[in-house]
Length: 351
Image (tube, rainbow, N blue to C red; front, side):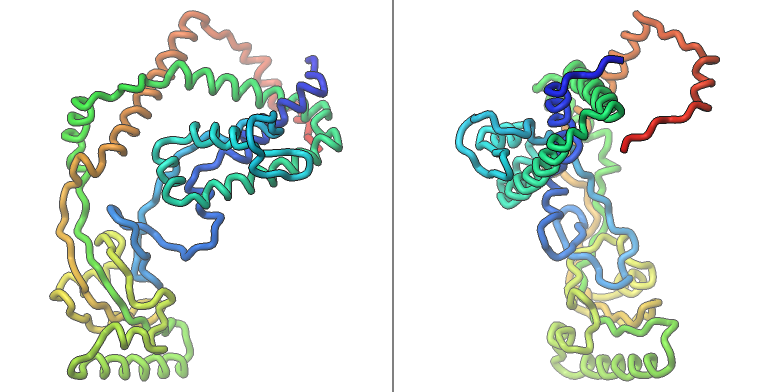
C-alpha cells in the first residue's frame, strides 16, 4: 500500500482532528460551562427532585453537528482568535454556524456563549495538531494507514448523506398531519405535579444517635407546619431542610416520582402538605403546589420533532435502498476461508 505524501497526510490529519474532536452537539458545548445541574420534565425545563424521590428522569436526545472545517485559517476575513501560529477566521465560524441544524442555531442565538466555547475547543485542538505535525507523528506508517482509512470512511459517509438526504420541501404539511394523527397516543403528556419539599436526612443504616437527632428535627418541623399561619417556604428555608436544591422541586411527571411519594401526593388538595414519608435517605414532607392533568400535545408543540423524525426515517430508507441497489448491480464475493485465517493474525499497534 502506498502512503500519502507528508503534505497530504498533514491535510488529512487536519480533517481528522476537526471531525473527531470538534464535531460536538451544541448541547455538549453547553455542558462545558459551569451551571447548576437540572433535568427537564417535558414540556418545560424544570428542576429535578433532590435526594431520592425522583425515579425515572427522562433522557434528552442530542443531535450531531458539523465541526469547524479547517485547522489553519486561509485568510478568509477577520481573525477572531489565535493560538500558536494558527488563526480562526470569522468566515470559518460563519461556515460552522451555517452547517448547524435550525435547532442548534436557535440554541446559539439564545446563548451566544456556546460559540465562544466552540472557539476555545478549536484552539485547544489546533495546539494538539501543531504538536502532532512538529513531531511528524502523522508520518508513522501505521498512523498514515489509519488516516487513509479515516478519509475513505468520511468520504463514503458524506457521499451516502448526499444521495439519501430528502428534498428540502419534505415532508409536506399533509404528511406531517397524518404522522401526527397516527401517533397521537404516543404524544400523551402524563399528569404533572408541581411540588416543594422539606427533607430531613436520616440514612437507614445510620447509627442511633443520627436517627434520634433526625427524629427530633422532624418533630420540630412538623410542629412548625401545624402552627396557625405556617409558611411552608419559610420553614423549608431554615437549616432543618437538608434538600440540596432547596424546597422547590418544580414540575414532575408522575412517572418521575417515587411510588411512595406519589401515593401521598395524589391524595393531597392544592397547597396541602403531606405526612412525612420515610425513604432510604431520610424523611420527606411534600407540598402540592399545583397539578396539570394529562393531555395530548398539539401539532404546533411537536411539529419540529415530527418533521425531524420523518426526515430521518426517510433518509435511512433512501440509504438502505441505495446500498441494496448498488450491491445488486455489483454482487460481493467473499473468500470465507481466507477471512477465517485473519482472526489468528496479530494486529499491529500504533504508538
